Length: 138
Image (cartoon, rainbow, N blue to C red):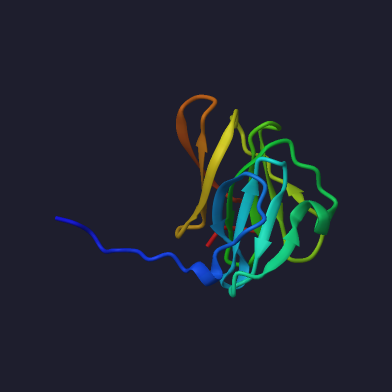
């Protein structure tokens, strides 16, 4: 049995990216794309470019990989080279997450139960973290 058919939205295709790697939901119905060039591009709900996290925050990535967003509209980015994840809140500076045992994070998602799920290629497993402070995935 075949599944549903998908048709590309040519008029809203996103061009001008430099080696797009991972795509995830962004705030307010938009999306975020990590690039091989070492930055993360943000797009609004109408697929319009909003800028890069590096330019908007002054943050320098090693090798950004998986991206997701939480209920507050913060963007969370896995940095494969630096072995860390960083939260980019709507307001304020980036926050480095203390994720014990993280070796080589490549993918991530916010689970409905308020957890951060990370694909760790460093030891070939999925790690689930529960945030214990003010911020949480929802």
